[in-house]
Image 1 (tube, rainbow, N blue to C red):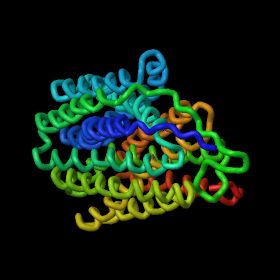
Image 2 (image 1 turned 180 degrees about the vertical axis):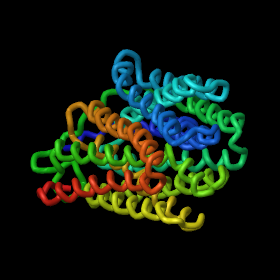
Image 3 (image 1 turned 90 degrees about the vertical axis):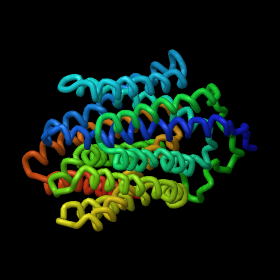
Length: 391
């Protein structure tokens, strides 16, 4: 018989609210809008690539030290510390320049890394295993509001430092309110299945943990590389195409809308048709959308391409999270950490390599770099299927 435990709905709602609000400030401003703000300060491709890579480096540090800090204190305190780090960074950046920008950018990334590694395992540990793919998709949909809300507000209020950083400070600070409502996490008892039965609702056999983990790491590596390069350098790419700051902010909000609307359906598809098939769909869709960016397209086709790109590219993280929570390993927090750190390290590498490529070869080389990462992922997915591994 299966042992069922009551679901802590209040904490699930509260933690989703924390993620939604903090993501607008920490990611929507810190990762989507700040590259546009820095580009307006006259930075070239190499310098912009460096400064937009540092938040990912800071995030990687947060993911690395977060588990130890959680063990010594609590997930709630580490989430609060992460919010505080980002608040400090948003106060420092508009009042400084040069090296201080580098330090503050890394600090902003540290904040989101600490919040991420402390909050998401806490949240997903409250969710029944058979609904986890859909809940991950729903959660990613909610935090997908960030790259819509942040650039839309900036497009409305302007890209001046007072508007950009006030928005970031406000949303990050508001996230502390629902954090106080979430109950302290408790150890979750694993459900027991009767002999001859499976805890998974799908008819197909569950993949081996090592196979699923390897696929999750591959998705995280390629997805992080492409998203990091795109998020850090698209403002400069758009400027070279003759787009103004308001147009770029609007296109980024279209990108965010795709990310918002695609996540739950793709989470459902991963639950019902398997992670491998869904990953291939996202890989092909992302590659096609990026190909449009390489063409001298008008704003209308660019908007359509960015909508599709946002949906499929953002889903790489959703799929990696599904792999992290569904591997069946004895230490799910360690598995989560491995996949998120892989994603973040690749995201830091993306703008560094992309900036150097753009400096040398221009925008077409920048797009080609991202396409190569997707070709490698597609080859790995096909190779895994030909090895007759389960989905």
